[in-house]
Length: 216
Image (cartoon, rainbow, N blue to C red):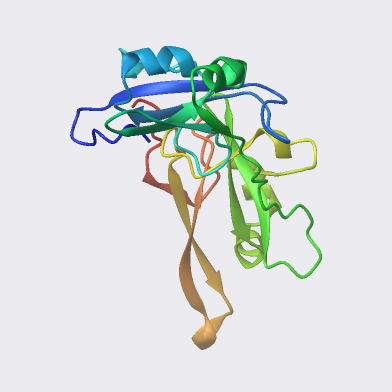
């Protein structure tokens, strides 16, 4: 998200989301690329990252949820839009920016029962709870013991405000296991693949598919 000067190079920037800034959201540093002018960054509370290898723990790159509030402004020859920190709402409005709060809440599935075919799970990586919806069929194929060994946790009501969905960074690696069903001539074998906590050791019969993305 940036200004209408779309051909200018973009910098990696961050905006802080603090508990209570957006409905039901905990603390997160939201990272994104923008070419918005530096004067506007100051007004909107945007920090520019000069060393992409040293992103603070608790930073997520462009997750689908949560997202900061947005700000937009019409200048004489162009329009500009970006994210804005909650602490800068008033200053941005005084400077002529229109601030739009993010009211989106995540869709979560917290119970084993019910009509949903998925359950919300997460692994912790670089200080965030990287969340996704795992099909209950997959949960059954993996089993609770291997889920725990892989560092995959079922999300609870207490976790919802801290869940981060769809982040480009950090991103856990994937692991797989060959699961055999049935016996004899009717036996079938197929791989089950899932994200895993990079701090965990693989349980028996699991192998890596991809490595965790922990350095930008």
